[in-house]
Length: 148
Image 1 (cartoon, one colour):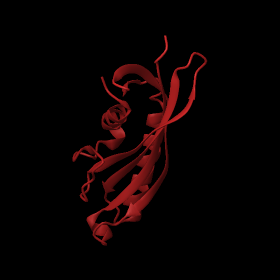
Image 2 (tube, helix red, strand yellow):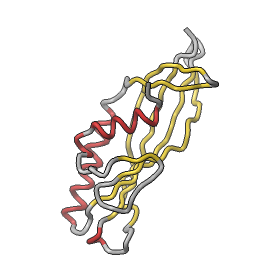
Image 3 (tube, one colour):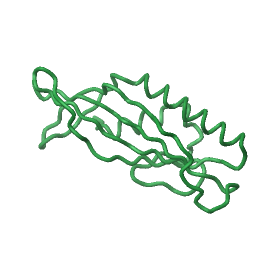
Image 4 (spheres, one colour):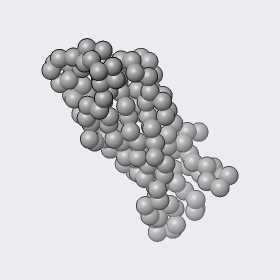
């Protein structure tokens, strides 16, 4: 059983695009080092229901990644990786999720998962040679079955 946050973390971890992140992908935490990433969620927002009353939600995430960014080549490789991650995540529609709502567990699925707005966000030490941090926005829409 994995909720939406755990599912997105698993999808990111399974992606060969993020193989460079041997420091791991943390939830709500990022180290300043290269090869480390942090996934931050903003919480679910109900966006609608299907015809029988099953709720649809959207959860937004920020993925912060520590990468090399000293040269134009490094930054181009980083941009290409962020684009590849966008395409990979788009292919993960239909992934299963389980959510606990009011103390009861419901199963559901991801309707869409998109990544956008990848940008160089920070130079933690002030020196590009020490690595840079990118920010990528991820949006997940999912439905859970509360009505049969």
